[in-house]
Structures are given as structure tokens and as C-alpha cells.
Amino acid sequence: MKSLIRTRAAFFLAFALVLWSSSGHDARAASLIRDAEVENTIRTYATPLFETAGLNPRDVHIYIINNRTLNAFVAGGLNMFFNTGFLLKTRSASEVIGVIAHETGHLAGGHIARFSSQINTANRLSTLTTILGVLTAVATGRGDAGAAIVQGGQGLLLGNILAYSRGQESAADQAALTLLDRTGQSGAGLYNFLRTMENQEFLSGTNQDPYVRTHPLTRDRLRLMEDHLKASPYKAALPAAALEERHRRMIAKLYAFIEHPTTVLRTYAGHNSISGRYARAIAQYRIAALDKALPLIDDLIASEPKNPFFHELKGQMLFENGRILDSVGPNAEATRLAPEEPLLRLGLARSQLELNDPALTKEAIRNLLLVTQADPDYAFGWDQLALAYGRDGQLGLAALSQAEAALRRGRKKDALSHATRAEKRLDKAPSAWLRLQDIKRAAKLPD
Image 1 (cartoon, helix red, strand yellow):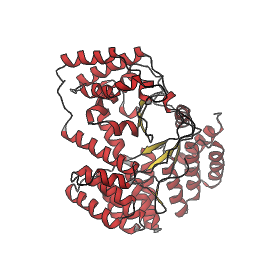
Image 2 (spheres, helix red, strand yellow):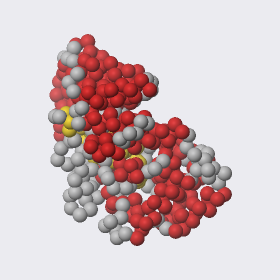
Image 3 (spheres, rainbow, N blue to C red):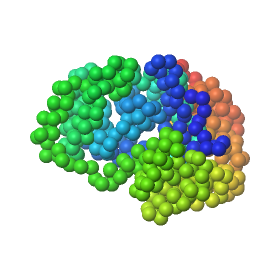
Image 4 (cartoon, rainbow, N blue to C red):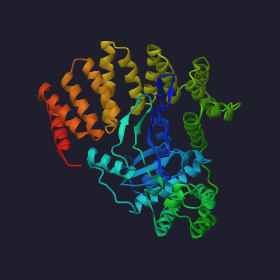
């Protein structure tokens, strides 16, 4: 994990990724990706399944791991993980939905120890980092407009995180098929995905994808699905066209940011679909060919003027090429179209802050308060709020925001230091003062 992927000397804004590299035979460095569009797509697929399973969708945390191996799993409570290698391997929305249903079966079946939805942030992050085999889950990099990463540590053994029993796998399959039926969806996607994994069973453990090692496949499991599909009234049910289109765009976006731009341009050459143009726009942006990237994204915006993620990408392109003032408009439009998306609002706040205008700084503070309220675990949001408060002369609140960021990075000593500094500058206003005391107590707790 040597450096972030860069264009010129700039981080990717909407989809920052950490380069992963081998560290030993099976160990791999990894990172957690933050991207509003990808997260939103998976949540759209998952929400009906969560609700039908009796889970509150807000209590289930979804994480996208930047790793090329094929895996998806649940761990450490209501936490669901998807490797980019898994997502890129899927051929349709139904396969992603089927695997989500299977993992939901594990959650609903109590196969993984649950956490209370009220568990405090520090403890939940500590548990996640244990699962990932890293010291901390550090929110860092570029966090705006649907972008940033949570850096993971080195030596992550993705293939050994979980080892379900065959009984649990069969139970999760049965639960998945029931959930799919109850939501009027076919189990064919899950069946088709498992069939693609069938040949992996014959490979040695070191050559198998982690999905096979963590989800042992048996002929009995496939037979269960075959029998179910024969009797299911939803066997031939296909995902709505809009869901399939979202899958194509998610795959195009992941592929365009992960693979080499030359490969992306070659793969999507002549593809005039929305997803094809989307991938090419990202690839051209990555090689700093703004003269080619902007017309592509403008064409997409003309096709779908109400798509917030197209405006987000345009704002990103302009921001990363130093056209900060020009980036405000697209980022503001993205936020207007999707005001509930904190990562898009963060992109707008960053553009506002970069202009160093006192009036815009106050606007940025308002936006960042909404960001940190909606996504309090995201340390980079607190970083930006600290910067905004500092520029606005509110040094006590700046130090308090720095303490929040440090606590979420697991840096308790730094959190306590910032909190102590904030204590000297803050008036004893009820909300800020009470939060300051909470941070101090959390920072003094043993790991």
C-alpha cells in the first residue's frame, strides 16, 4: 500500500483507490472504497431483502473492498463486505441480488454474532479492524463527491476471515431462496453465480478464490436450488430493467477506475451505451485528457440531466484540474438532485472551501455539519469540518472536530490531545461540551 492512484499529482476524487500489492503468499493489502453510486446501487438491491428478513436496513453496514479476489461475506455483527473482484465477476443484477440474499440469510440466521445497533462508534470500528486484520480503519484520502477510501493495513488474509460450516451454508441458501420468493425475485441469479464457482472446488486451496473457501460448495447445495427453482413461481422473474442498468453502470465505473485506462478504452471502444460512455469518460479523465473527458460527461448529462452522479463526475474532473470555481456548479447540482447523499455534499463543501471565500466557508460548514451527521464514522468529513471551522475562526470547534476525526481513526492519544485543546477554547454550550466529554471518556477507554 505504497501510494494512492493518481492523475497528474492529484488523487481521484470520486473513487479514490489504494494500490494493493502482495505481501506474502496469500496475504494482500486492501482498502475499503467509498463511492456514493456503488453504495447506493447495492443498498437498492439489498433493502427489500433486509426488510423482508426483519433487519433494519440502517443497521446493516455495507463495505466495498478494493481487492481483485472473488469474495463476499458478513462478519462482526451486521457488517456485509463485497470485494470488487466479486462485483466485477457478476454478469447481472440478479447474481448480485442472489449473493446479497445469501449473506442476509447468514445475518438473519444468527450465524454471525450480532452487535446492538446502539454500539458506540469506537467499539464498532475496533471490531471491523480486527476482522480486516489491520490496526485501524482509517478514513483518509479524498472524501468528496462520492469519493474516498478507508485505508486498510497490510497483510490482510481475505481468504481466512470466515469459515462457514456446510450446514450454515445450506441454511443460508434456504433463507436466501425464501427471501427471494417473498420479494418476488428469482433464485436463478444465486444458482448461476454458484455454478460459475463450481470448478473452483477442484483447485488447490491456494488457487481457490476466497469465496469457495469461506462458502464451501457442495452438490447438495446446487441440488437444493435446482429443486427450488423447479417449483418456484418466480423462477423466470427478471430484475427490473432499471436494476440491470444500474448494474451495468456500477460495473463500468468500477472497471474504469480499477483497470488501466488504456485497457478500459479498448474494452469499451465503440460502446455507445450509457455505461460505455461512462467508462470512457472516466478513463479519459484518469489520463488527464480533459478535452475528451468533458464532452463525454456533458453528453451523459444531456442524456440524463437529473442523474446526480454524472454531475458529480463533472465536478470532480474540473476540481482535479484546478478549475475550482467551475466545479462548484456541478457539485451543487449533484447535491440538489441527491441531498441525502453525504459524499456528494462533501464534494460541494470541498469546492467551497478551496475558493477561500468567507461566505462560502460558512456554506461549507453547513454542508459539512450535514455530512458528519449523516456519516459520523467517516473521519475525512470531520477533517474537512475542522478545516472549515479553523478558517472561520471557530478554533474550539475546529479542535473538537479534529478530536472526532482522531477517535474514528483509532488514534486515542491524538483524540485526547485535541479534546483537551478544545476544552480550553469552547464555551460550555450544551451540545459541543457534552460531546467533548464523551470523546474524552472514549479516548481513555482501553482498546
